[in-house]
Length: 101
Image (cartoon, rainbow, N blue to C red; front, side):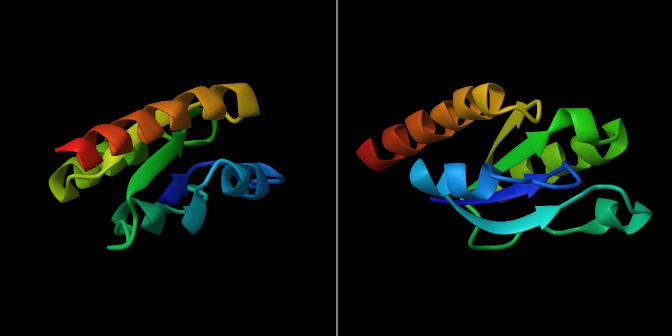
């Protein structure tokens, strides 16, 4: 499953931990620049992870709206692996439900 991450200046080991869980990173947007608000979610993205402790509210709301328009599930977490693991569990569960339809 491909994922886009918004927020978090440096991801550290997060991409490798996501890969171990079956995800691959399509794109990472730090959210520090004003122009990041205009960033489009790539077509190949199947999920969006928003790291809320490194993101302003305007960008978080814009990402949520853009994902909803595209029909891509969005999950929110702090930048800690325990939070991210819980959030991607919701992405996996939703992907499993979609494959049953």
